[in-house]
Image (tube, rainbow, N blue to C red; front, side, top):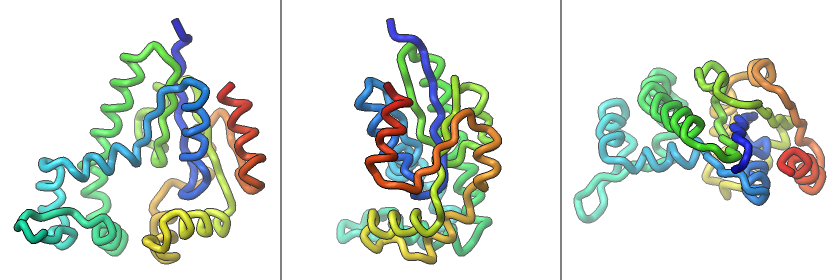
Length: 196
């Protein structure tokens, strides 16, 4: 039986967390992406019903008459009104926390959890170790604009970045800190050495 390992992976927006997660997966780790789970929750009718109470303007009607949540409108709504952001986080974050703790307790395998907002989440103590990935802001901005093919503007990037914990806060809970300011091959080499 594999040794039970639960790694928390956090870092700044656009620092390389998703790339790191893929590499760990290649080495047999079970992976959990909070961002992916949040997107799934946004599709849940019960969650949509609650979001509609907070920010009805983020929904549009299809030709069928059914409403659907527009992610771009949601981004605009929460980053122009931090009160809405806090309310939606209060709705989503406890579910993510519960999912993570449940997976950590039930699995006897090697697991890695990508959670951008790990600071003060209450999940920190459940991990074997926590890895933080950081990068210079201009590099991260460039990566995000390229990855989302202009669906996220520079202004969006800055608002998202400012809403997250600071580098100092992330590093204060971390066992390993990686600065991803070099080439992709250099970064992959570092992650491979940790995953192997």
